[in-house]
Amino acid sequence: MDGWTLLRAALLVAVWLARGQWALEFRHHHYEELVQVLNSVHNMCPYISRLYSIGRSAAGRHLYVIEFSDNPGMHEALEPEFKYVGNMHGNEVLGRELLIQLAQFLCEEYRAGHQRITQLIQDTRIHILPSMNPDGYEVAATQVFWQGPEFNGYLTGRGNSRDVDLNRNFPDLNALMYYHEKNNGRNHHFPLPDNWEEQVEQETLAVIKWMQNYNFVLSANLHGGAVVANYPFDKSREPRIRGKTTYSATPDDNLFKKLAKTYSYAHSWMHRGWNCGDYFEEGITNGAGWYSLSKGMQDFNYLYTNCFEITLELSCDKFPPASALQREWLGNREALVSYVEQVHHGIKGMVYDENNNPIGGAVISVSGINHDITSGVSGDYFRLLLPGTYTVKASAPRYQPSTNVVTVGPAEAVQLHFYLKVAAKESNPNKKHPGERNPLSAKPLPALLGPR
Image (cartoon, rainbow, N blue to C red; front, side, top):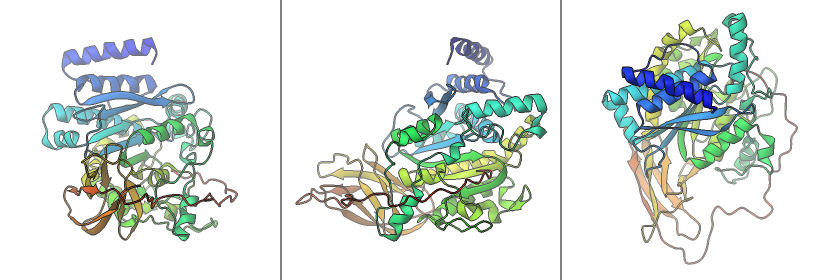
């Protein structure tokens, strides 16, 4: 951030602090204004927030995240990590403004002592990235400024400053997963291709590094151009045939539907189904069942990390007028909070050795669900599950696996800890087979440019 931006932000914060409040309006915020608002929120709630950058855009703008936690900057064992990402497509701007409003709302509610938000911040580490694509936003906003929102092009500002669609820019792990699925291979944390860092844009690289540094459990990616909660997989298992779509379920399909419905039914009108001239039953859709999309962010989250992510299409207009922002905030506010609360369902616990030392990287498997997750570096794990009874196994190299049966209810996550004994001799159930490689090299088909 340059000195002039810092000075402007500091002066604005000083005025707001003197008043004991800030006058955040329902309007669009350019990059410098976005930085000012995030700084002001942090300064109003310094003990429960932290402002940090995960990197820079292709044009050099910081990708700022504001974090909310009772111990900002620290991972606390058994406290799940959650993230919201907005404005991935630069011309889809409602998510950016909603996340600015959400940051202010969390701060205000905590300062007022409201129990629901206070509890949420005490029990959750929430990360909010209002704009993944600040460069594209400035392109779109400039056109709107000169020509009006009704002239905002469907693609103007969609990509980054190099005109690359960031939601078609993540490493394609679906093809690898679909291959292993047919051959009873691995089902989680698929390896990235060689030289992947050279194949993605700076914004994509920053987000992947962010995922590597934080053990995110749940996430949502905010878009525009439709009104629907979209869940994985985005990429079809079947070859693309023009005019035909094929539902592509994850092993956690029922859970993803529940997550999507949580947002849809808490939203003021998404669940009605009819929006923007389209109909989606209950306001949700499988990504590939809508249209197939390769190299998207939500599939990448599921296949590379422990994180479950859905994509939220939130407005018919990609760049709605400022006069519509208050109504949109009121329509989304409860849904934004309710969705964060879903991170506290399922099971969670610690994986220890016989001396109570935490084991990081232990594999947590649930019988009947062909998708494993792993414990974090501090030994804690989080496995989102629907209510039911499950057989759960924890395993790690050089240790004997341990299995438990647990019943999950509809309320908060059940704690289930594992204590692993050292194996008689080294075994690694997750060891890669010699010569294992990606056998797929099919020529990619042209990308479809739908809202996602």
